[in-house]
Length: 238
Image (cartoon, rainbow, N blue to C red; front, side, top):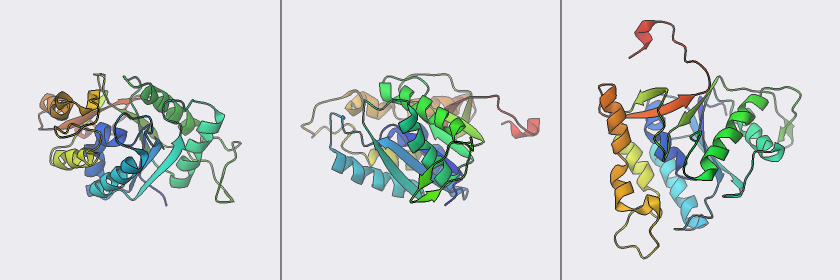
């Protein structure tokens, strides 16, 4: 199945937190979108693999994506080497996306920066014909996405561009809160973590509101780029 957009996250919930509104908007515009989670977040303080599997399936349904897979890399310990790159390449060649979205280039959690570089490198390598891969016993053809964009996460990185998600923020929040094991719950007996604090829950709208304000809309999500953005006309700029 060919997709228009393929979003990668080091952990289940990374994509929803970083670009859930953008995905919901693109799906509404008829785009086919998929998500690939690198790990199952098994080192997370709260919840369990089984719970997070269920939560990620629920979030996928809310966003309306057409595919979601997990590569079962080791949470906290995956590295950017040939074996891991080939797993990503298989997914890129399987889904042939025009656009890839992936983790922030630098962030509080070490997996986010690692995942960002791993996916970016694999996107380039996936276009090399002499790298041979198979999936389900069939050889895959080379494929390189047109662009790779990195969503924002914990750190306040200045975006290179923003996407207006006005009208889709409620769905974004719904998809994020599908991960109920991970976020603030005053009745929970589990340990508090940085993302399970009341402050973090209340902060879910801070950045998207601020970015929206700066472009004259209600909500927006930011991204960084790997090469210059190009437009056909000044009219394409908002």
